[in-house]
Image (cartoon, rainbow, N blue to C red; front, side, top):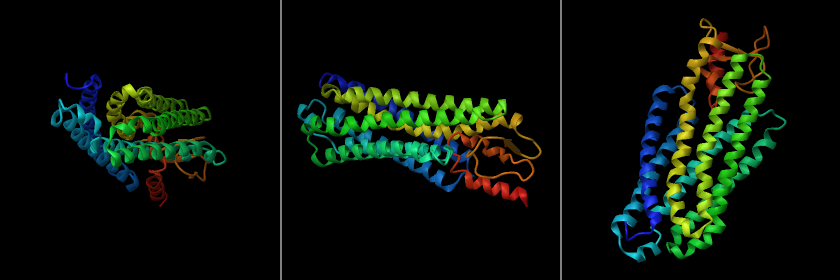
Length: 322
């Protein structure tokens, strides 16, 4: 592609990878609705919103790549114009990241002990809202002005703070989840429960590593005006990683349940008892031994869907008491 800067080659490859990852997003969305049709309506709507936004992002990304790589190929002045679909695709990514990070923050809120939940979640909420504000402001400015001459200005006042707050929020979410799950495991008397919680910690760390590495590299390229095209390519991938991290976490419940159901549950009663897993499945205690119980299908919901599945858990328990 001799008529374009070298960064556009990477951008094209990143767009191709992003399109492939979108296929995984679609597959995971289909898998979710096929296997978890009993989930709360709120959670179903969140998954639908993420998939719709991801679909919109792919469409906008393809339009932007078509404009720069085909329609205006070999026209140097085209690089001075910001096609509307490029910042629009970034804006869609901003909303995807915002929705996914809000979801995990919501889970942290319900996992925390009452006296510290606001202390833990408030800094995360501030960072998540900050990335939404910086990201939306940057993309809307580009949509309005169109001229590439504004890039140096918004790079330091919008793009860099937006990417930095995404990275900080991601690290805080992961650390909070790991600490909370470790705390639950350390207070549990069941070895199998500890192993399950350790598995969830590994899942959280893996999710953070994948998204954080891309975001940090994106931040490193964003601060260099000569590498803004490379940053554009990385931005194509970020939203897909967040969408898939959410869907993978949701779809992992069945796998975790298959590992824990045989050893942690009573096959006849379909229930599992935790001695000290406070706040994981709601405030329900047995009048006989004071231990908490939940339907085995909801045990692995402690991964990241505790709060959304709470209504279903309560209903199943009330049915069992009748």
